[in-house]
Length: 101
Image (cartoon, rainbow, N blue to C red; front, side, top):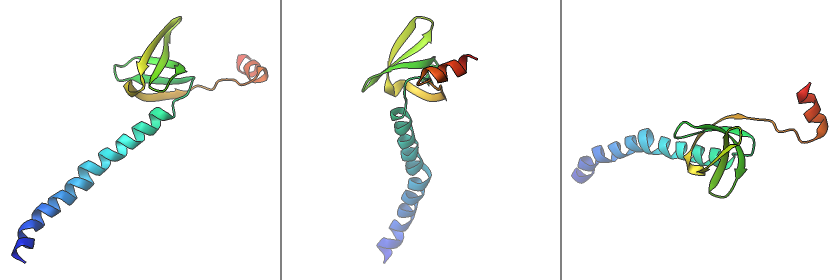
């Protein structure tokens, strides 16, 4: 019984650390991984370096961003910090005509 009472504070500290530090970090990592997997062409993203661009090409582990007219940079997917806006890409000529008017 005396061993249990001496270990109780350490067990309690581990439980507190788990719920306050470890578990939220795991959830944040899962959310980031799903955000990176959900990126598609036309999305506007921000890299960890602060570069804003529009996704023009996707590969398994890299992503190409248009950052200016005729300027396309290639980054690792892991360097994407956030997705700002999902730009709607018209699928047919009627949708394209509606966006022009």
